[in-house]
Length: 111
Image 1 (cartoon, rainbow, N blue to C red):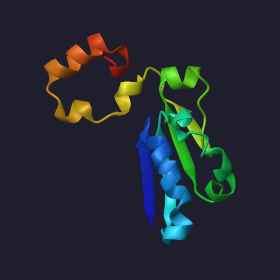
Image 2 (image 1 turned 90 degrees about the vertical axis):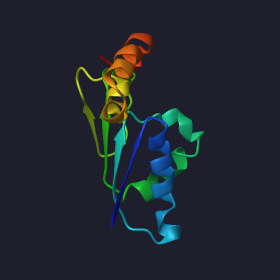
Image 3 (image 1 turned 60 degrees about the horizontal axis):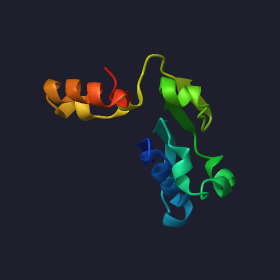
Image 4 (image 1 turned 180 degrees about the vertical axis):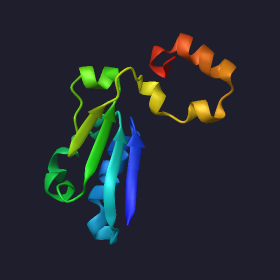
């Protein structure tokens, strides 16, 4: 069984991949989405309701996405104080000087 996950533009990619699971004989255990950029599905997400009803889905939203009303799946959790950029893995590999500079230049990168 597989869990699929995606952040921002990766979320619609995960949703679309999960929708193809029956035809690809994949057993999707669930979806974990971080700040899903749902507008990036180019209208293809709206017809997937019946397929996705069988796949447990949880979404986590930052302050920006929560304020915009982004909701998807069985449960959407708001991570208070989180920025969109807090969901990326850059702080794990980028030197602190890079992350500090990014947080000044790109507010979404977070503090």
